[in-house]
Length: 170
View 1 (cartoon, one colour):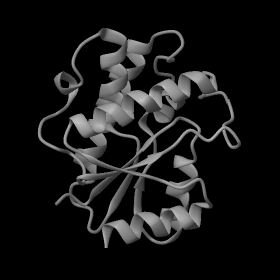
View 2 (cartoon, one colour; view 1 turned 90 degrees about the vertical axis):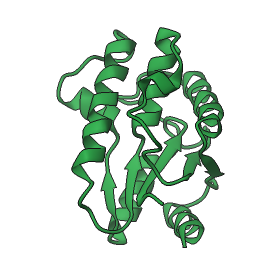
View 3 (cartoon, one colour; view 1 turned 90 degrees about the horizontal axis):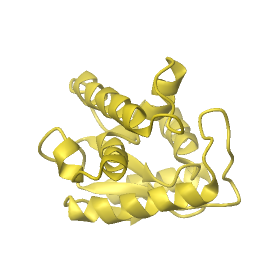
View 4 (cartoon, helix red, strand yellow; view 1 turned 60 degrees about the horizontal axis):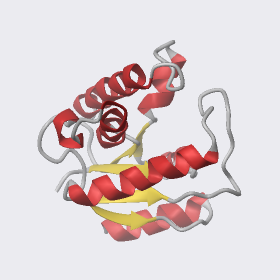
């Protein structure tokens, strides 16, 4: 079973904070591809969603290759599935068409639900909460269809969420 664990779900749902807490416990983590695409001046989702999703997908595929030699669990803040779902949504193509091949992540994917109390827009997250919820619905539908089991993360502290994840993986 893969050591690569995907943290997916609603934009602004606390995934990056969760990854920081996992890193603090000594786990390898990979930051969100979309934010890194924007940090290097790549396409912006509100201006060119197809270009943005394509760039995020390419970066997420590179992340998988780069982490191949890593020992232990590796936690990904989003990944190829998130980017493939976004690309499929904006192009009308099947999600599977954009995936690199067989299952890239551990069978269990952890989903951060919509959480309006912590949702914040920022320079990289310019879409509103309704768009974030629609994205969450697409992901929560696509993941089981791709053969992944999903675990809904509680709306709780990052430390509690880390405990939930590690307990499920034990």
